[in-house]
Image 1 (tube, rainbow, N blue to C red):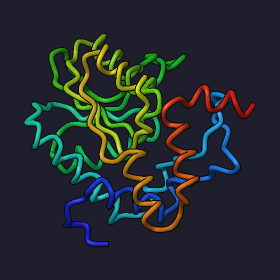
Image 2: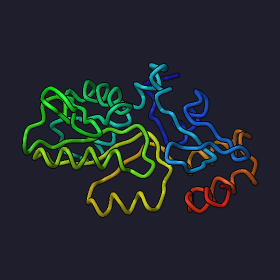
Image 3: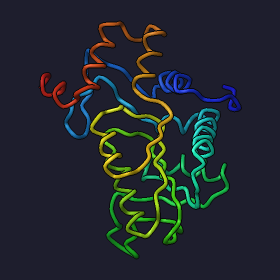
Length: 217
């Protein structure tokens, strides 16, 4: 893989399918930790094993920062899957790196934020996957409570739920994602990995995942 080429949303969707970071199974849905059923499962930790791909992801994140002209003092990853991508991005843009736990530790200094984040610092948060947006927005809350200003959240992949977009809008936080379920569906159809009927199932789920899951319970 050429790690100098620009990474488009469909390029990344194709790569995620090839390395099985994303798996499609409309006929035998997966069950998420929340109990919801889903025809798609994403585990972007698979990207850790592919150096060329992870360099292209870091470069794509860096390009988003440059394109939006975001002022950045610190790159902060969400624990745990956002941490390595935050580290690679921070190294690429030569900025300090921190990470944010979902909750403060129960011992020692009881830190929720590890690394150096000062009041007033401009922070870009790195997440691997956006589903409901809960973990990323928890990190945003923790950073804001520490006095930092969160410039944006960047992520590798999103399921593009309408509810999620509204949550980020309500929080007044910019969300920039490298690829999404629409790009994935287009690539899967093109590659013959999804039939039109299966693509319709995926689209129905994406529009209302709770109702789709309930109908199959």
